[in-house]
Length: 127
Length: 163
Image (cartoon, rainbow over all chains, first blue to last red; front, side, top):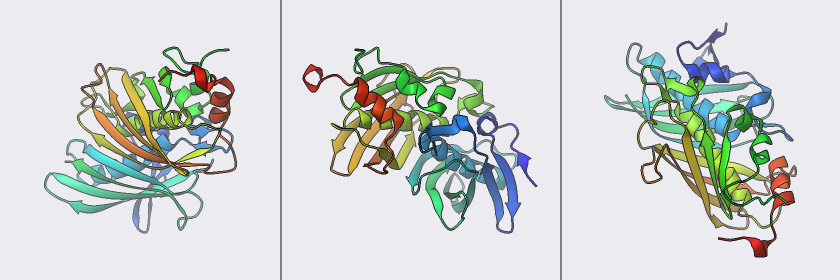
């Protein structure tokens, strides 16, 4: 079952939804024409891919800490592994270290095949 | 011929990119190896409704767009490019309700890779809220970007360029 992310305008803007699988929370970004960066390939805008990864990390932390203020990103690093085509994109976050003030989160994104990731990210957030 | 470089660059460079157009990005300035873009504030870009602060990912999009354009403006011939990696430092929160300005500079080109640094601010370049480093693969795929073709079609002769 999919559910929208409420109270997070940018997540609503990207049209991102949440599902749960056996390993936990997965974010889904349905393809939309206005997310494209290169219309000829076509490929989703690199900025959108980065934003989706960062969003996946942030939602992962928010779900981990219900009721707390929004985690504030300190830095975020994105590696682009493959062209991100006109398909649904999935993202999963792993909280590597959850400290008192800082959390380190790793994110992976894929499209049709989870074993062929399209992008990977890692970031530090102030809690 | 409309000059590509300068403080009145053709906005077609943005409208070639569907997502940049969707965000209403505006090209402010282009030069040999650098690009400046304004991202208008919009409530839909907010990540923290309590503070009205734009989500970091929207800033990533602005700086990725600037960086790619800076690379296109740095390379001598038409080539496709692909972002290899991008790392962004959020120095402070962007001020709510304000347009965001991004500037990227391609500071090193090698045979296969372009290196870019970028920053974003509201009013003053000396007071940025984000700082960014990115690298791009040159000639990354067989399909040349429409943007690269557009720039190439409008580029002034090299002798007319000013640095």
